[in-house]
Image 1 (cartoon, helix red, strand yellow):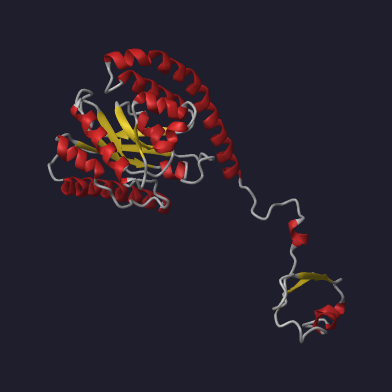
Image 2: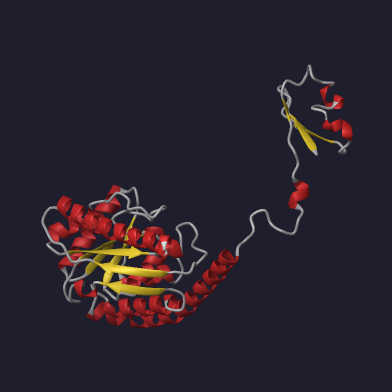
Length: 312
């Protein structure tokens, strides 16, 4: 057992160690209290070091957590293996893509779909609902989705749409992954920079006019608790000004499989992708509210199913 005495006028903290004798069962030891007039504060701290010396950790790692960590390592090993070879193929084809399909870059998106599918398929089962709601490949659109996990990008790429993601500029510096995003024509954005935001909107409108589609996460960042955050109207402004449809896509389950801030683990689970009917209009506010309503209804329905299943 140990005691920590903190003097008011001194910064140094001194530890006093005593053997556990019977006299220490009394409230205070005389050896400590002889300087009572000089010490105004005495904090008694009970040492727990004997308990921590056991082989069992204080917070034991469950089999589930251990399995999730192992799956996470395997997940990134698989994605790295496929990335190297597919990126080389993308790089070799890039001059021809710029020459014949500069704006949509369908070949690059086919490579990205292949990469995402090969990575996700061994670990996560994805179910799709509403694939018939996807616009034809030659029709530009603004896609919007809720954002819960790093796994969202992989999931969305498996759909196979030739859309351009809006991404932080720092992501483009990542080896291979960032370079591949650059080749695919992803649009860079500096957060909290109004000039960059304006340039991003101009690029999005220019791409949609030329037949390409763009993809936004209207919440701006990943949800920490799975709840739908406030929507930014950038995506809906682009759709309203260019007269292209907005296609809402709800992702269910990605946040539980790879929680935000815990990208090193991969839990067991199934992902559901719900593609809603496209909405069109000339008022960004109306488009934003309608899309948000579809997300809320879909997520609430999912929560109801989960609650009923857990009660059974």
